[in-house]
Image (tube, rainbow, N blue to C red; front, top):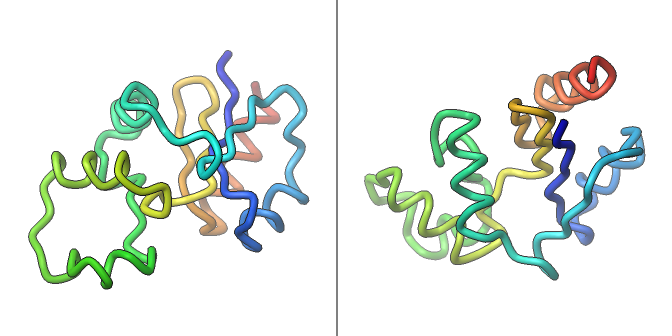
Length: 118
């Protein structure tokens, strides 16, 4: 079973979540030093149902680039996810065929449950 975490090492929230998560057996990918590939972004979107589901509207560049004033399509979300690592809602846990994206309690708890079950 695939077990992978996409994270940002400099993000305090990611650090806190990962410190409280047993990542034994997980492949870890730090997205700033090892950018996402097209295949990785496509796989996440396929598993979760859309590119928008793993896209962060909290990224500072979301407003800086004026994206908050645009009607974004799935193609746009994909493009921006590949263009800049800050647009990934993180951390992202891929466990088998499940994806848990972001720091919301529901996502983190879901990832923990799936990791324990797998």
